[in-house]
Image (cartoon, rainbow, N blue to C red; front, side, top):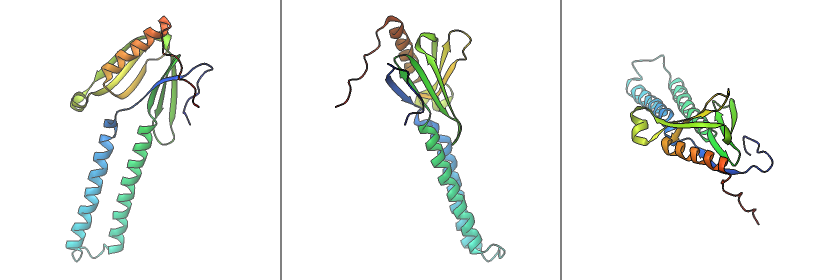
Length: 180
């Protein structure tokens, strides 16, 4: 089920997901929490007689809670990652942003309202993995669109400008053929 509605006669040309690098920080945090949990279990097994107030059941419960937190972190990060995308239709750009498990925002911009598009990379990871933000400047009082963590942001910016030009010239691709 889509997180957006299309107008009559509107069809999807392309859907662009965020780049996988969006998951690096959560993956690193999950790795270090798991490492800390394993290290804590190891240290407890070597020095259990020094800390008699820590029972094996309590230590196991703490270990299990840490692993559960890691699993929940990873599942929620993947859910949020999969629900952040940009859809290009023959009429609009539709940006779906999932800020958390519950918070979702859907924004729409007519292709004819695009003034300029900038792709920018920031940081060393952004440079080496070629990802960054695409900022779409709009006509009028509408707030600019920013699609974060896009793969090859400059290439995507160029493609969006081409879609805008094709829209204004009436040269967008025809709708897909209906299925059997």
